[in-house]
Image 1 (spheres, rainbow, N blue to C red):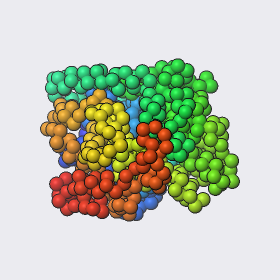
Image 2 (cartoon, rainbow, N blue to C red):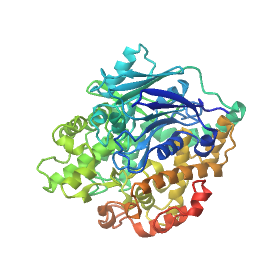
Image 3 (cartoon, helix red, strand yellow):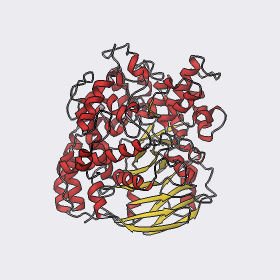
Image 4 (tube, rainbow, N blue to C red):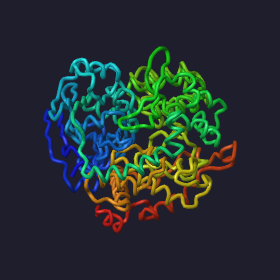
Length: 593
């Protein structure tokens, strides 16, 4: 069997031990790797009601069998832990080259528990593992940390995942950055690293990942590459303009949340679009390992070359804050990356503060459209300085402090993404039922409701949305477990394609039905964990504004998100009872009884 390094590294920072154990065969078959492995380990190892920022929590860095295998877009790794933002079992995805290097260094996953007495980093060097003192890097930004470790280890080819000041200061929206510019962004998992005094993981490997059936894989990849090169989204839109290509598309559908979801149309969206970026700040395309789409954008502002912003970040720092200047948006994005802040949550939190300022709920005067003020707030959030300290734990806690939690555009305390669900019934359902909170990527219903992939659905109707949402959620969980980029699903590729690649790479027999069952098993494990943390049906909802205040412009005018009929059908489709609890029959079916 191939596609795996075959080893899981357990790092107990309290005792200072690093122990390697074989990757159990049954876990490969039931969870594949990546998100699946991480979710299973965190669920098993973290007790109920454990403090997410305490020693009982664990954080897992995990690759999938397709990571580094050479399949197109096989570059992803997952960071999984109990979220300090909302106590859900959170998995956050990232690309670039770190996951590939982790595998080459001899491990499929790193499981970190306990807390070090002083700052440390884990050094994985061609099969060897050791803990090293990171005191000299503590306080450094992401860019400084990355450069410092590479210099001290005298190797520019090292791949590094690390935190910045936001993670050290336990911001609940702190992220984990890999290869400087790629974020495992959602859920505040950077704060989990900070709580453990873990500054970074550095990896250096050699060789390549073996494939069980190379000739079979070649045959499978003929069809995969054909879909990727012929699909208009993957071959043209993402390649030419990156993810910000969505800015004008979403705005023209009147579903671009603007000024904290007060409206869903931004008159100057063109100024922060992918087309504008290509014409002004773009320097080069920046692909991940084994990716020929190259949606990453190498951009330059103020003479500094960095990456991004991605669509969601450009929206959060742009339209949601009423800012139409790409330079200010890019500056804010770069600050978030360097400080290790989730740019989505940071932007939405600032937008919440702007609305509260607009309505006189806070003393601070923060005007819509003020790019300089936004960047100043980002910096203060990253270092927990002054008013930024109040914003550093996200919009829900901030708005709750001032008695207006209804102005937090979040689900389960996680900030929503760049799509207004009042004009997207399926996307709203995916938001509301998301196992890590107000997440868009774990059930990307924008694909059928807006992009028409794999087929075009009416975004305003409820018909069939529960079935589609479940399918997208389960498939995405399986894709995350496999270690391949979700954008492959925009080709469109379906479950049979992923199953065929996994079978050829690993030698396991995985068909499309088993793949979807694996995805459903992963989703259900996360659901069960969240239930133990107190989440129930009442939490499967959206902010009051999106349920009661209709949109006023464009085709979605007059619409709100329709919770009750959608939720009832969704629970039934999942085999859960009317309170959203998985039934014994369903648990037995998934091997979770």
